[in-house]
Image 1 (cartoon, rainbow, N blue to C red):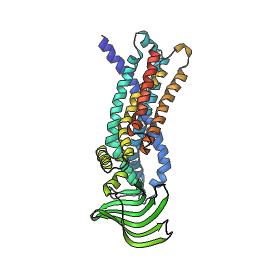
Image 2: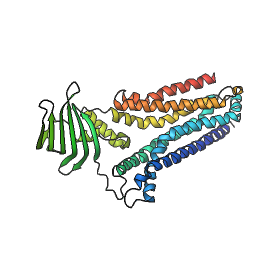
Image 3: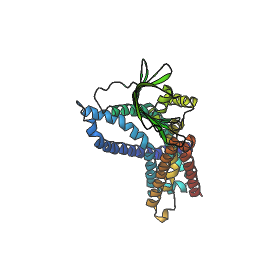
Image 4: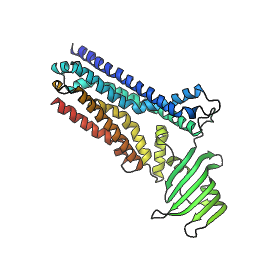
Length: 364
């Protein structure tokens, strides 16, 4: 009899929560996608031959990223609304009077959140990453019709290596080596002052060395601009490190990202941004697991105080503060200010502690 009751209870609460989660997620995707289209539609329809098919293609590539980004927030609102409704209809009171603990009441929501977190991780890796990479390549080509397949090159490169700041319009792998276009190299002194400036129309890595073509150089010593048809570029930067430093880790498949992180570490380059992004692939879906604890304040409390709205707002605000801290810590991790592990998992750990503390306080 008890097992049958448990199954009915889990199905009842879990079903109510999941329906609300799906509704909130669909609402966010539809509204935010419409706003995004209003902002981008002119650019999408600008190329010759563009039409409704281009808009559909944009939605197909953009909507998965929106769904992935707002899935934890939809779970938070679904928790708050589900528990608020159960509290308003006195169902929570009945459950508590029957001897059920707060943890027992939250158990069905936690089970559904675990499934959502697992699905979020799989969906992000199999759908979102590839769609985001295709969309970025399409945007770089001004949403043109019949764009050539992506050759794995880079555009708009900006990186720091050793004592040099390097800008390049594009990087491409070709049969005769790696080519850079519109190259700018600024050399810095130990004090951080620019001591030299080189601008080249083209650069090529061949036979283990870089060579610059059609270049202009400026040195702070003689204050003179010099021109040359070609010159050797003295740097330890190799093409693999170049491509690893300039990848966008948020749009890179996980196996490739792991390889690039290993490449950066082997070359002694900074792998903080890539490592933080790699760890965030796990921490972001885990955010859904915290939401039942943070939203629990909306469903449990002293009923006679008639403070249901205040408790619901408090639960939503607590969850919102999680996302603020998460974005801040990820930014600090990618900038190298905080260790990658701390940047990715500190919000999850601290709010898990806060959530359990709230539940235990309400239980007592």
